[in-house]
Length: 305
Image (cartoon, rainbow, N blue to C red; front, side):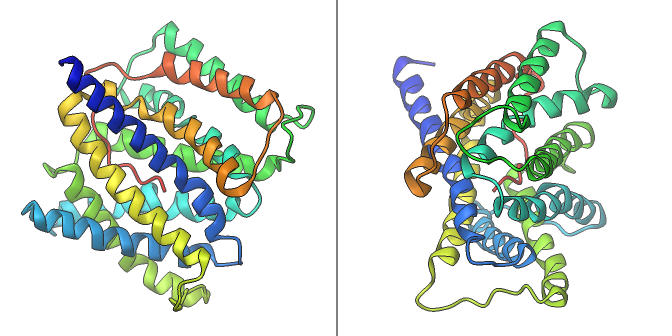
């Protein structure tokens, strides 16, 4: 890459990190007035399906619905959005947005642990040390004796870590069994569409359907903004991975965590004790040491919101 390309791709990386990092405080705002998690997940999937469908239409990407493709959409919708986001919206009621961003940095570390028994990766001491750093950072967040400047409910921190585990399962599923020859944009569109259909009866039966209001209240605006930002940042992620390489692009994880803390301070006025920066440094060290090798760092159909 030329210097000009490096500078441009780096700018794209920063903008992606800023966008994805903002979705955590937006989720916090979305749950602030008591909206149910099933209703929020339905609208997130519906908005994602509409926007991804538009992108696929512009790029003339067909969306197959044969048996294997449908199975892929269902699996990824469940482990990439429905299950993790149902948990994350519940946890968002109790956790500070900055802490949620910090806990999501465990995704690459969880992914490495899951990859070992699946044969997607091999054991290396450098990455084991990285797992140790990630564990230290996590313990600093959940340990009751550590002062982070805000109360951290240990139970809900544990629940939120399960969302990171689901995302790690998703990336390993794709690495192990592939995407039936479909591109990431097609996969995300299909998973969003099928996921929205699955969530219709669940949302109605639970009584958690969210009727759009006009003018849109702040929580609904936050949900729409988070869904739109995710779709466009994800599309940029796929494009950048194809241009600059997946190893370069995966570094967005650092920026998502850092910007998540920054946006939590700007949007929600969250403040933390100095200990949070020690935990952040440990998490960053863990991500750096565990980051995938070039051959394994392929673009993923990520369901994060």
